[in-house]
Amino acid sequence: MAELTIAVLLVKSPRAGYLAVIAFHLALMCFGWGFWLWTVPALCVALPAARHAFRVER
Image 1 (cartoon, rainbow, N blue to C red):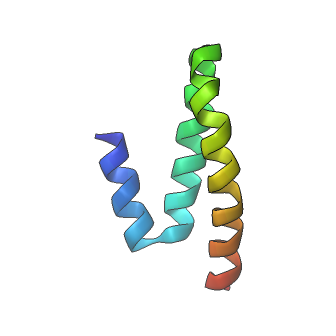
Image 2: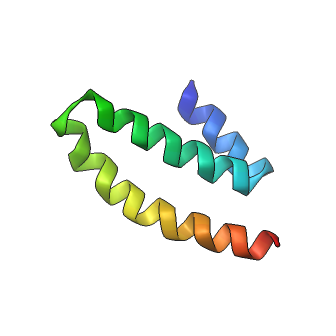
């Protein structure tokens, strides 16, 4: 359900959506090293995309 909410946020408000994506992946990192294999590459994509979205919205 969280993934669907984040997807809707990305469509409606990219700024809030990317903040939710980043927060979600940072929270996943708290569950152990196995989640780091997924979250680190995902954050490497999400952070530059969020930076671009923030610049475009200004």
